[in-house]
Structure formats: structure tokens, C-alpha cells
Image (cartoon, rainbow, N blue to C red; front, side):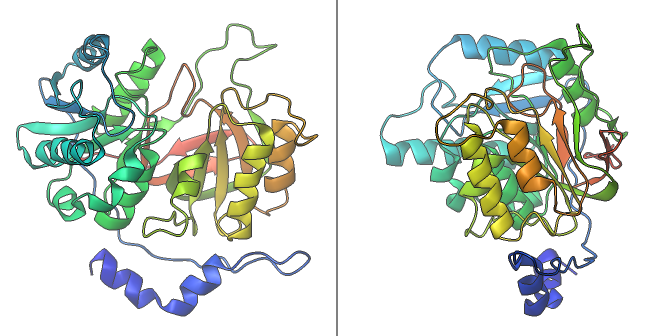
Length: 353
């Protein structure tokens, strides 16, 4: 049974029950146990494979980006291929959209290209997400890597193509640590599951750069979904709205005030998206704990207030997203969360050998 047929067979009542918002003081929302068909996984990279690198978000005009991309891809033992418009995108809107779609579709359809990496994030996927050929992506499954703005495309590919994608550091960014490189290699160049996701070694354990914290204890298992919180919000009410039912939800963001993080999390809670998740892991949110006159609550207080009483395990602090050191996480595979021990373990490989 294909994915569309399966979802149709699940029934309208189950969808309504699973997405109903929580009522203050009322019973916990129904958490349906859904049996989903497995996500399609792309082939792993092998030494010498070619990687297409493109830019779907904020335009890149700095030629140094090409050098950064080349260094990262070659360090993986792979061969970079830069998209025709990576450094030469039109400033005209219609032309820009067509160029980005042409670069994406061209890489997906080209049998010589074994995977597609976004060079950077920023803004722009919202302009093309409704025009992407998702049937083409499903017919030619390849590793797709990105985070931040590309979260929207992760969500859309999961919904429309049923393909595992990879939330990880992009090769055009100014910083790319050996830790980030090894995390990427483990996720896309090896057939084994990445296993326990570990933060980098701390130089000062008394004041860790990535402090882990239990928000609500317990354990849970489910498929991994999520990404950048702002982009998850951007997908609400669209055909690629996030499906959190029975899932391990991971979220992260950057340079948002605590009240802005709170507003987004409250919206997800009001929409019933948090209550039906199996568990939640909050990535280290870089630059998000700056004081603000808008609210008296700091970032950790926000997490406790919005996530602490959901009745599911929650912890924070993994190096996901906009951190100098970045884990690469396959989205759509099974994982186990232990909020008491503050661990997230990826149980399935995101690629096939």
C-alpha cells in the first residue's frame, strides 16, 4: 500500500482526534498508535561519489563559498559538483525561482549525482516549496542535506515523497569543525545507524558549551521528525505541515528571544502537535537566551513552562542546528529518547548500503 492510500485508510476521525488541541484541565489528548509504512531511504555515499551542491535559500555571491564547499566534500572522500546558479543567481524573482528549481531537479534526475547538499540556509525555500517535483524525488532517492531554512523542504519531502532526509551542517557555512564532519560522515557514508548522538567533548565540564538538561523524565521511541522551529511554524496550515503523532520531535532555533520561542511552542501546543508526540528533544538554541522586556521568562523557564507538563519525556541541549558543532540526524527513521539519561539514540540507518 502506498503512502497516500495508507493515510486515506487511516480515516478522518483518527486525524481529527490526533490533532485536536488540548483543553486546560481536561483529559490528555488521544495518542493513536499508527503503523506507518517505512520511509524510503537513499543509497549511502561511497568513496568517489559525486555530490551536487546548490543554494535554495539566501543567494550566495561570495566565491569563497565554493572553496568551503569543495574542502568539506573532498574531506568526505567525495567529488563536489556545483550547481549552475550556486554563485550566479538572478536577482529577478521569477528567474530566481526557476533557476533554483532547475538546479534541484537537474541534480535529482542526473544519475551521475549521488546526493544533494544545500550550501547554506537563510530565506528562500518558501518561494519554491510548492513547485518542487516530489514524484521525481521519490523516483530518484538521493541523500538530501540541509538545516534551518531547508527544514521546510525536509517536511515537504517527508509528506510528499516519503523519503528520509538529513538535518545537518551545510558545507558552505563559514565554520565547519572536525566534529561536524565526522557526524556527517557517520550519517551518510556508512550503512550502520549513527547510534547515540553525543555532544562534542567539553573543554570545561563545570561550564559546558552544550549543557544537557532533563525537562521531563522518561523514555520513548518513535520516528524522528522536526528541525528549525521557525520553519516548522512556517509549514503550519500547509500540505507539508509537520506530523508529530507518535514521533520523537526535535526542534532548534537561532537568535530568537525567549518570548518568541515561547510563542512558537505555545502555538504548536495549542494545535495539539506537542501532546501527541512520543517525546521531544530541544537542540541547543544559539543566541536565544537574551533578556527581553517582553517577558520575564528565560529560555529554560520557557521550556519548563511549555514542555514540562505534557506527560512525555523531554530534554534539551543536543548540538543540533545553529551550533558551531553540529550533529547530522536522519529524519524519518526510528529513534529512542531517554530524557532521564539525556540521550537520543538513532536506531535505524538513514541510508541503504
